[in-house]
Length: 387
Image (cartoon, rainbow, N blue to C red; front, side):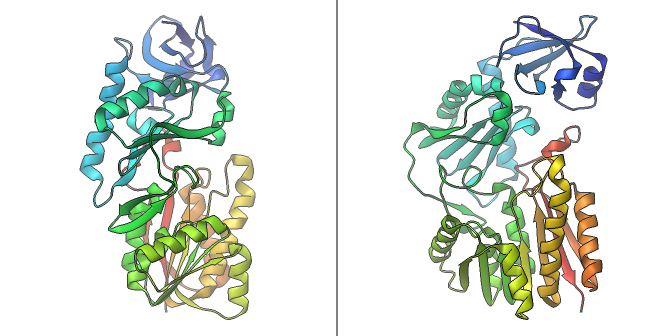
């Protein structure tokens, strides 16, 4: 097995719990090749465990195993079983959840989602991609799934010199898989949908929003109708809006599937539509904002900040006294303190008294590592316009 020499700065990163070592902190790569599992050593020869090696990415090493025997197939199976055991503890009333969440399950750059008897994998580095066949075999051994699909079309793979690809790796996959989240039936298009077919990280926030929502509801950026479907039983009417015709069609099917006759789905540009609603004097008792990531990198943060502020300001103007705002951001670079500052500025500009009643994150099948802040990205703030 090849070994890679790292500097003192890299050692400190590992000791503080971060699992990534960047190119600038690698002294020598020896005989390591793309996708190898390598041993990490400092300049004195001390071992710091094993890592996935990438010859393309600025993240050269991703720690994956402690010092000792090199990780093998038995080791990877044990990691999967540990991830499964944790989900059995925290996942309730759903058959759709994240089984493996990369670094948070000490399987860096590996994501595995479960939709009933159908599994979806993402191998986001050269190391996990090299082991793709192993992940498939282990899933077949442990779960006997109906299908295993890869959704390896994430942009991050370009940094690893890996191709964009999606397809069924094992079994048979229908065009639409029906799952249940919090007792709500969802049709999921695994090959065609966003992410791996659904926003599983929002599952618990969907249920929380249903506890507060009432009256006339606007669900902006609805996608498959996750928030709208959970809110509908508590609302008089729900207007669900998305710019994608495919998303709107899926949301309509999901509304029909659940007998939610009070949901109207509309195709529109949310930014423009919020402005039109405000200009027309429309008002709502609940507004949900769940946009896609506006800031995919640090360079985009300034523009993203303005975008988030605009939609939150418009939403606050649309709310009746006592109304509820559920506002989300899945942009890692829009950290919670920045997101709250943005919301505070929008509140100040609207000139209405608003209080935050819940600060939420992703569902518990998406745990985070304090030493790896990149594993905590989703913010969900529930606020109320005071009468």
